[in-house]
Amino acid sequence: MAAVKGVALVTGASRGLGAVIAERLARDGWAVAVNYRSDAEGARRLTERIRAAGAPAEAFAADVTDEAQVSDLVGRVTERLGPVRVLVLNATGPQPSVAFEDLTWDTHLDQLRFFVKSPTLLVQAALPGMKAGGGGRVIQIGSDIVDRLVPGMSAYAAAKAAQLGLTRAWARELGAHGVTVNLVAPGWIPVERHSGASDEELDSYRSDVPLGRMGTPEDVAAAVSYLASDAAGFVTGQTVTVNGGHTLGDI
Image (cartoon, rainbow, N blue to C red; front, top):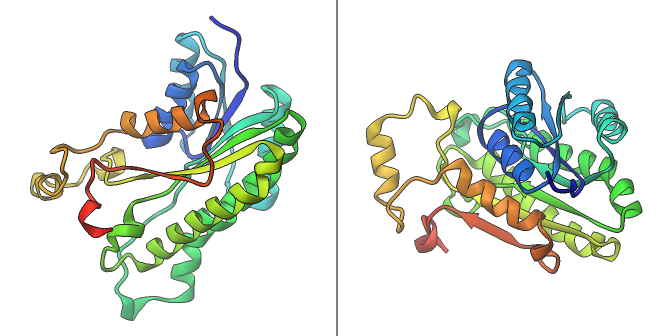
């Protein structure tokens, strides 16, 4: 195997998009830190697959919305694999549909914890290692819901819009340290948690996608791979929307 490029930490990586992103980065030559909160078995299986393919990988349990656990997480990753050079902010929580009349401040906080608090804590924890190493990559996993604005999802949309704002502000602020900050905004990418979706729902969504198909986790991982690469060294503060053109009529 070629020399390892450095360490990539992927949050919420025991399954879904995070797992596929972690495997893609491992194939690209990164040592991968697989973060998970409760799915230890999924994280174990993933790290075993990555190692079997010849790349370094270790699993790290942590609640990435908790300040002390985030600090400990980055410390353990640094100690066992090395300083984080690529940080993929993928972890998410439940995304319930809540009618406007039923919104509470706690409804908003539930989303802001994952998409404002957690990214802030993680970037702050990883930044010293990136600066010491001459730079790094921060890649947020956002959502095209900022453009689609689905009824009942205003708290989620607001938090994702805030995540986009952070991406652009941090890109300007951290550029002097050689750190790029970008956001990948997937559309509906069916993963395990969408197993209950009906054929009718899938067909209805697909019919509005110009490319005529549902996206795959591999589509998202390819965008992350590019933003983590040397080829994207002069790309920062940008949003890469991965949805087959689904929102073209909404912009």
